[in-house]
Image (cartoon, rainbow, N blue to C red; front, top):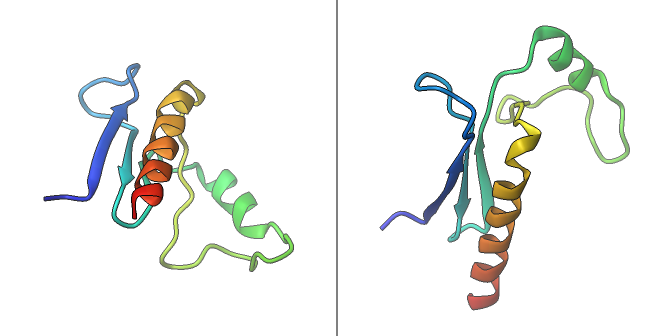
Length: 88
């Protein structure tokens, strides 16, 4: 059985776009599918110098865009992961 719990898909997208939220209960992580940012946004994120954050985007990471209308789905995924952590 998959440890992924489907939470939801952006209700405002059509058949070919589907920002999606899952909760990975086994690993207690959120799994997000979103839109790729434009080159300007990705470059801006890569150039940020923040404490505890290396400059650039590591090869195993990605910057994605999720519409704000999906906040409730992200909260639901956070709650599901927290409940799974409480059980383990």
